[in-house]
Each structure stands twice: as C-alpha cells, then as structure tokens.
Image (cartoon, rainbow, N blue to C red; front, side, top):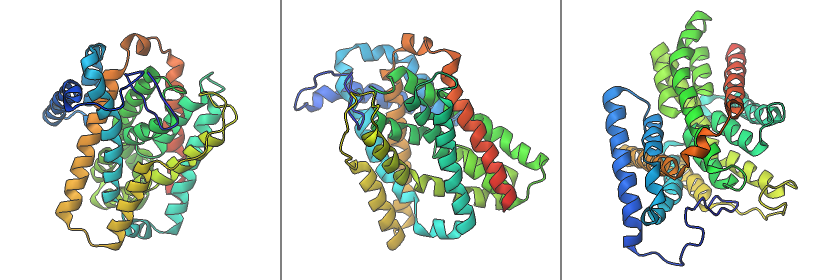
Length: 345
C-alpha cells in the first residue's frame, strides 16, 4: 500500500494515471452489495450500522486479494469518504452553535481538546504509537467512525497501519454502542437534570445517531439537548482536522520520513466548511438537507465497508490488548470530563 499526508491508503502500490470504468466495477459492486447487506441486517436486528458494516467488510476481506477489486475498493474508501464528509456539512448551521450557548460550547471545546491530549499523552504509558492514540482520541472526541475515517485520511497508513486503523474502528464503534446503553442509566442514577443528562450524553457518545437516541431514551428534553451538543461536536470536525493536519505537518518526528511537509488544506475540509456556511446563510429546503444527510450516511458506510475489506485479518489478530488502551483511555476520559461539564451547567 502507498500513503501520503492525506492518506492515499491504496491497495495499488503503483496505480495507473487513469482507470476505465470497468477497472472500478468489481470493487464498487462488492462494496455496494456488502453495504446493502449491512444496512438490511442493522435495520432488522437492531445492530449499530457501522459495526455491522465493519463486521461484514472484515468477513469479506479475502476479496481484496483479487486485483480486480483494488481500484474500486480504493475509490470507495477514499473518494466516497471525502464526499461523505463534505455532505455532513449539510447537518451543520451556525444557529446550532448559538443555541448551545457560550458556557456549554466552551466546555465542549475544552473536553474535546482534553480527550485528545490525554489520550496521546497516555500512549507512552501503554507503549503505543502516538499517531494511533491521536486517531483513537480524535475519533472519540468528535464523532466516532466518521471522524476516524477523516483523521486517517490525514494520518495515512505509513503512520498507522491498516490493521490498527480497523481495530480502532471496531473499538470505538463497540464503545459507542455500550455508551448508548449505559450512559442514560448512569445519568438517571446520578440524578442529573434533563439539560445535564443531554449534555453528558451528547458530549461523550461517539456516534451521532446513538448520541441522539441515548438522549431521547433519558427524556425528550434531554434528547433535544443531546442533539444540539452532538451536532456541535460534528461542526468542530473541520477545525479539529485542520489542527491535526498542522500538527502532522510541523512534526519533527514524522513516521513518514521525518520531513516537514507544507500544510495543504484538503478539499473535503473546505467543502465541509462551504456546505455548512451555505446552510447557515441560506434556508436550504429540508428535503435537500435530509437527502444530503442520507447520502452522507450511505457514502460513509461504503467507505467503512471498503476499509474493512482492505484490512489484513492476520495483522488484525496480531494486535495485542494494549492496542485497545487508547480507546479505553479516550472513552473514560470523555465520559468523566463530560460528566464534570454537565455538573457545571
């Protein structure tokens, strides 16, 4: 595989300058079929969609040994991901940040930064690579699998290999599913108000749908607060990616070659910001924003499935228990800091 600062993550070590449509066909078809199967199973058996996509993708990883699938899998894991991130911007408006209020917003930003910093700092304690810890911390702090995919497109597989990345995806997805079940119960046991519970759940659960679902499982008012808090975290995806890109570019201990790489803002971050800005300034019809949100979810699912299919299972199984340490640290830190923030409201 080859990779650069913006995560080429390609199965083809030396891809041709141009591909024909037929070159993409096999990889795109198997990814689409696997994604449809994941969506059907998730819908009928109440399993998190991302987790089902990962499991099916891993089960079909043997297909990536067929060179005919390489171009299509690369397309789905890269281009589909980036377009999906752009479309996520349709869910964001400046009004959401205003509705949250200055204190909750400041607490949320502080929590997100602290989760990433503490997770990266803990990497040495568990003898883990700091880039892998950055991936786990950033994904936990922002929006789970979507953020992990976006971060990996910056970090690249020369810093974090494909097996470790897939393991991180699985870990944060399972952690988010458990959090959706446990956090509302813990909030009730702690006697939190609707506003406090909504902040706790929205600020600490990774996945958007699970954060919103967890909030409404506590109460309708808590669900509304959790929705605003969670979408604010999503809105901070682009600034966080910009900071990570800057850090990687300035790093003197760069795993990709110890070279200072000039910072280039990826087009999908610019697209995300542009869509969010348009959505804030212009009243986009709800059917359009709903359609964009559905398309974003579909494209991100395709990217997750393709990424899992590209993983090497034998390398995944070689990862020890310490590989989960950054995910555990990030999840626990996120919960405790979010709880502390909720108690201040």
